[in-house]
Image (tube, rainbow, N blue to C red; front, side, top):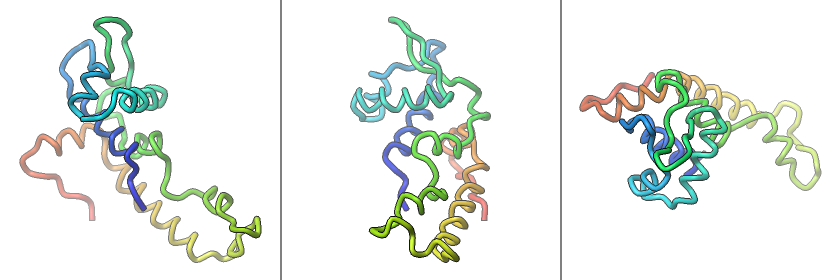
Length: 148
């Protein structure tokens, strides 16, 4: 299981927007420069985050991107779901049936049970963190402990 580049860079872009102190917001060229990403990729990520309701855009010469709601109200799990989706969902089995067109393990699948448990554990951890928590962790000399 991997965290995709889109999820990683999307969260980093969101953190930059949250940390930017200008009331006009931060622009795509500024985000591109500070994160070392192409203008096109930053624009794509900002579009996904804007459609997901995490950021607002202001047009014009003085325009840019700003948070759509307080950082404390933006849950990490919802951001990741918006950028890439769940690690496992029931659709996974329907999308990977093999050559037979139907999964041969449809009844009593032990693998599916494990993936469901992993997804529940991931959701449990990610639901505990907001964007504000990430900002605090990033700026704190003492790192927060992850839940056991």
